[in-house]
Image (cartoon, rainbow, N blue to C red; front, side):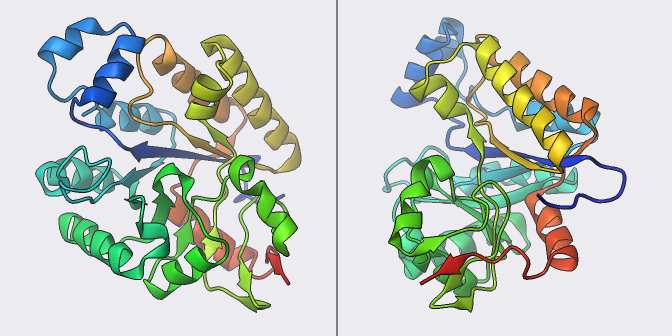
Length: 287
């Protein structure tokens, strides 16, 4: 349980990993799966759609956190030149949302790579970057968090209980894997907040093969449960998870958050709230 600001029943964090903007073999495969055949031929940048997500979030009084990659062209999973879309990413901030770093495959355990990507993104944005989420949820616990702290990050949004639950059997576990916490290393607290991911689009659609209806019903149920318990829901919805009715699912999730009187802040805003109001009460435990 976390205490949302007065007047709110719970916290819902809306986050987006920007893996794709341009059309590649991977994005073409996604378009084929979504039966959006026209865009394969005519649309060069099928996922240059961040304004659509911001419009929806703003219309419901919410804000999103957008994790942007800052890779070099020769690196795995490169899809877009961060500098080329500088205006798009700066607009996110200008509209009151947040941009964090979506680290490449080797950044999570490489200080050199991490600072390279962070420096690139900060140059593009013209301001510091506070938040981080690793591509493919790559994470060494608690070593990655120590590296992030040393690099000046204030929070990490990578921890996903579905993937990282086994760490609790390695002498390390959070007090609540579904609520923000502050990690420790060798019983010393790391000066970083961890914002766990509780629900992700790829789990619903790629792993569980759920329909739009079942996906929507499940997330709405979790938000209603959070309302009763002053709980926390963190949703990852890629900007490429569109078409085939998926846009409507995300819209209904955001509308449900409004109906449940949820606070929908950026993760930096949530981190500031936790820092001021909860302090050390959510520290993780390490052996």
